[in-house]
Amino acid sequence: MTERTHTTRRTALRGIAGAFVAGGVLGSAGAAAAESGWTVAETPTDRDLYDVAETDAGAYAVGGGGDVLRRDAGGWTRVIDGGPTGNGNSLYGADVSDDGERLWFVGASGAIGEYDVTTGSLTDYSAPNDVTNNFNGVAVAGPADEENVYVAGDSGKIYYSFDGGETFDQVTPGSGSAIDAIDFHGDRAGHAVDGNQTVFSTDDGGTYDRLGIENANVNFYAVDSDAPDEVYVAGGGGTVYEWNGTAWDPTDLGDAGLRDVEVEDGAGLTVGGGGTVFELAGGDWTRLDTPTGANLKAVVRGDPDVAVGASGTVIER
Image (tube, rainbow, N blue to C red; front, side, top):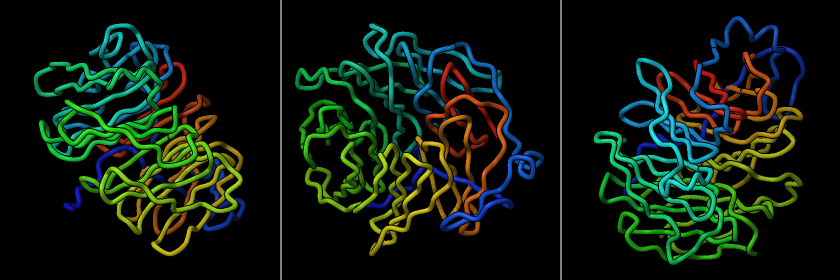
């Protein structure tokens, strides 16, 4: 299995000061404010934005009403209105082919679309096998036209395609609870989390083993899969879990529910309710001040870093 450079969605950052928490230090908002560098960007929508991904053509965000927004030198513009079918189904997840040329997004009523960021062409793969359940997330592995695509289903199923979306198979890895997030670090190797506080792992893309997390007592909303022994899960109660190959290490970052996490090479970001952003650096998490109180739902590291959330909110650094 070929390991790929992980450029998808989930990462986390942190700061200094204030109160100690398990596994790190919480910085006060005042101490972090001067250093955070986050600014609010103007966007052409007031609909919720649920995910963001970095492509070769810049960052793209997806959200309510089937909106797909692109960031370029002139700021944020809408490139798709209504989603892949034009029916206005909300889009909840996005990911990018390994070469950065194809943006995949999924959402309500079985919506699945592939957007070529080099040509602007859109392909509709919605309702695979006539399935019209809500899709919560997507992971893509491989270059354009050769992608393996993995879709997290609200019905507890993972839908997967090894031929670039032309055909899909399906598997129920757990008890049937909604698959809330999915991420892959290899062509057929990755992780998923469900609404039953369970993490699943696969090394063939079609069968899954339970990986934890025992006695978590919080809901899981995000997973960042970088290697078999390098996995981060973020969820309710401000908790981030790190898997090192033998055990899960929890870090309590406060009360805000965390909706996304992205970590690579020991550096990362996690975001959540009330404009919460934490940064991971040097093994510690620091809370960063942000210019918004909106609930943040997704983050991607890039140039710049981008977080998106409620009512069309986008912040950048």
